Length: 239
Image (cartoon, rainbow, N blue to C red; front, side, top):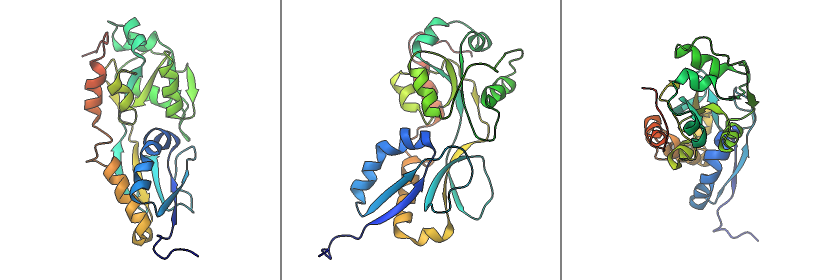
């Protein structure tokens, strides 16, 4: 017989991008479960961009801004910086940004609906770097796989400075140049309006905003990540 004092379990169906889920969400999920053991999480992490699945209660989407009937909160705008292993930065210290890109293996992250080498193409264009061949290098399905390759000591990639700020702060990866790309993407917390009346959904939404929203401590500003990365030994910055 069920103890009447035992809270009734409520399962939330949650959707998140694979890199966000693996690197940011899963390590913190135990904190939410400790505070709210009556709420169980069913987490799905599909590839690609677009609206959440129909059976999802709440979602974090990697997306550009869009107008829909859903309640949408921007957790943070994505700013991409040129990231590499410290050894790569040391080997190429003193080079300007154009030479640094030309002399290194490029690593790309695939985004559904965009050309495979979209971000590097946009980065060199917006930074006025002409004549560079960016149609080369490795392509990975997710940003977390891209970062794992960089951690092995090879290649350079355009990486979200906030999503992987722990690697930058610890010096496992560095940002040799301050140049960044803001291509309009961000991480958005999305909920159907009627779902906000559900206690479990409202709790989880508030917790996510507390963890990852504009005033959160879990995601420091990109400028603080730049300062941490730039302090790594042997790193040259193109001022």
